[in-house]
Structures are given as C-alpha cells and as structure tokens.
Length: 361
Image 1 (cartoon, rainbow, N blue to C red):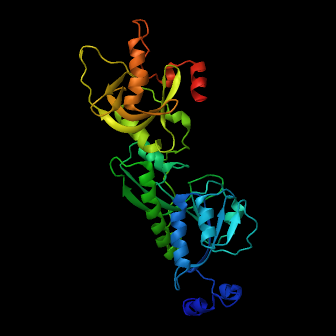
Image 2 (cartoon, rainbow, N blue to C red; image 1 turned 135 degrees about the vertical axis):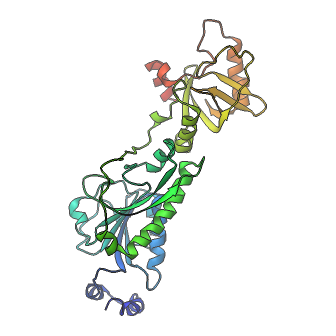
C-alpha cells in the first residue's frame, strides 16, 4: 500500500495534514521520517543529501527535521537557509513523530529514553573504521598517527558511551600521502553522506545483519588541546612533526620557546637538508639555521632538520625578518657560557615561570 500511494502523497504533500496517511503507511521500508542531530560542516554534507532527497518525489526521506545546538554553527545555518524545521538542544518529547534518527558530529550523548522513541534506532556517521579512533577527533588522530587506511562507519548509537554501538556498514578509504586533516575530513564527509543514503535505502536489512564492534583494536581519539602543539625537539622526529602539522596546524600553530617567549611556527615546509661548516659538531636539538636561498628557518629535531617559512612572535615575521631582526642579533652577543641562547627550547626544557609567561602571549 505504501508504495502504491507514494505518488498520491507527493501530490498531497502541500495540500493538507498527512498524519493519518503516515500512520496508514507505516512499514519497514522508506520513505523515512527523519530527525537529524548535527553541528559542524562535516555534518552539513549528510544533511545536504537528505534535504535534496526530501525535495524529490519517490525518495527515501518523507520528512526531515533538525536538532542543533543554539550557537551559530553550520548545521543550524543550513537548516534555517533551507526552511527545515529546527529544534534546539536539549530536545523535548517527540511523541513518536520519527522513524529514524541520524547523528553526525553532534557531540552530545543521547539518553536511552530518547533513543527508544525511534523504531529503527539512531544512526551515526563516523569518520573512521571503528573500533579504531572512537571519540571526537578521529580524522586528526588518523593523520597524526600516520594511518595509511581509514574510512567511514555507519553504526547505531548506544546510550551512555560514544561510538560503541553495532556497525551497520563500513567503507574503506586510503589516506592520501601528505594530505591534511582538513582535506581528509572533507573527503570523508562526502563519502559518509553517500554511505548514509545507501544505508537508509536498505535499513531493515542492514539492521538484521548488523555486527558488534570487535573487542580488540579499539583506540581513542580525544579532542585536540593546545598542549599537543608544543615541540619537544629532542623527542620529535621529522615525520612526527610533519604529521602533527598536517593534523592540527590549521587549528593550533606548533609552538616552541625562544629566549623565554613563545614562538608560533607557521608555514611548515617539511624536512630540510643542512650542510654544516663543521661536520664534526653534532647540532643539538632546537638549533636554528637560516637558509637564505629558500628563506626558511631550519630547526634541528631528533633525527634531522625541519623548515618553517614564517613565525609569529610579537607579530608575523618571515624567516628573513626573524633572522635579521632577532636571531642574528642574539647570536652576535652569545657568550661561550650561554649554551641555550639562540636555540628553540622544548617545553620540557623551560621552567614553570617561563611556561606561564609563554602561555600569556
């Protein structure tokens, strides 16, 4: 009956209440009445496809409403621009108005009594191959830890804990060499949106064949904090710094200490090759060399040199500006006893007072 009447519903959609028709056509097949929970641009990609499908006759979305935080965030703006019914969080009683919930980058735990109001549960689009990288920052940790393969997972959410529910489907995606977290996140957002639509088309079958997550191989992807951006030159390798920059550099600049002040390291250019005048002297981690030909500051780390084109001290400076205005002047006044002068100092190597001064800048 539901399939036969779908064309009738399309014609009646703007002609009056459809509550009775919806009850009559309730079944285990689409189109679904969806409630979408989301916040950021990653979530908008899924919401776009759902909105487009809702606006087409014969699609898998019968109705679509949105739950968002009250802040001015991408999902809320998209819902307002596209005249989608919008609910603020926390959500009131829905009285069985929806078949399926969809959660994408929402960041709030849903209570069991809310989940139970959805006959087909609440789906989650997660940008990793669960159980690897459960948590709020899976894409960043994928880059930071050098994973070569990632993907997206569509799962049913469980109350009490994030990212532990049964898996409905997964799709692998190779991590492109040298990509950033922003680039990978955009790709996985698109891939996840399409996988969500495929899952909704055959939802009852997917639910029947769902599988619990493996008890082994689980890793946690916590939020990125400023503390992760501090360089420890004697411990970080060239590859680790490269991955860290590609993971968090667009959000939090890498940091080091120079002459008691915090310096933010910008415009990373990767591994550098340095020819030293005295090959017998092994440079200490944190040593800085100015490469005039490429206008780059090269810094010694655990296993080599890495370069930056720009730094932020009191203001943004090119490598040449920093060398001529600060580093060169400092090196001219260094005495043999000032072993740390002119070096970039790891956060482990400064006093608590130095760190507090650095954090205040």
